[in-house]
Image (cartoon, rainbow, N blue to C red; front, side):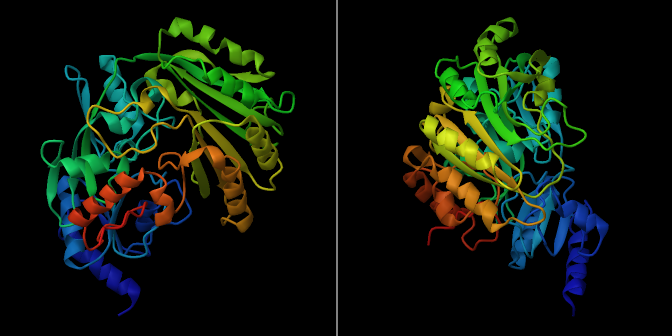
Length: 460
């Protein structure tokens, strides 16, 4: 029997267990369902289940477990780190429901919902979620991986405000996971990500009274003022917790479709989200306007539902890799060398810096697995493959991270892209927490049925 025939038989058998469609290799529907935004490391499962509801997820996991096959989940595929080569992929994009409880300031978010859907559901009640810079990203996976969003310095990690997680563990058993019902699992999935512990069907998250923000980006000319990053770094030392900001540095291609002011230039895009009184936003941001010549200014007051305009990130499908490092300070000499190194690279790359601190540094009311809360900044160097990730790209990412080695405290799930070795995953967590995560994995998935983007092996 050929591999394709076997996969077709498997898909047919699975289709009898679930209500959502099931796809086998060799069809357009299969290719569409298994492909997310990240085009490297694509999943190549034996079957893709487009789950219609939580029961479909349970049935798919149980079916795979009975046969000793790996199983994994995917929504948007932004954070895909390691593609699976067999087994069952459960695509949750059809499970996109959101229910808001305005009195409790919470939202129930199904596994397939994006931040755009959550924000739009919360807005009529004057509330906002702790969403990230990209509204098209899946809300659940983002949250459980930690989640450093636009309101992060004011309210903390998105994972800090999870009230309940509904999930299916490797044995096919559905569970409602809370601090009271299963404290170890509840601790692990909030910050450790769900992929190593089960397939999530929904979460209850907190919402916050932020109907409007002041924000956007200042695009600064790095050629005219190479010290623009140092000016941003100094500015972040005194800003209130209501302000979250980041900088992206890149050489813009000289091509049609891009703003004329940016084409062919090395530009620092300083992006700001101010959640204090909107009328105070311009005064808080004003010092940045003198940091370097401003090529383009998109700062404005906006409803939170338009917050994707702050970073204005593009979300076309692409193959990309990112190396993250968390640091307790930014050395100006290292910043200057980073900009020189990446600005002269023979391929397209982006340097991204995020200001942390504030509420991110404080422990939540209910402890979770988020690591390295004391980090002051996050650095990510991203390269874009055409068509493959090359040795030169990998070397650049590692050399860039090494510039900050003396000040590095670890890595981040949220701000890194691409496969990670177990040794690299260890760097995301404090050693004691990593050991605890492996014990939780051993309890809930001792035989490794779950295929996770981030390898946390069960403790033997």
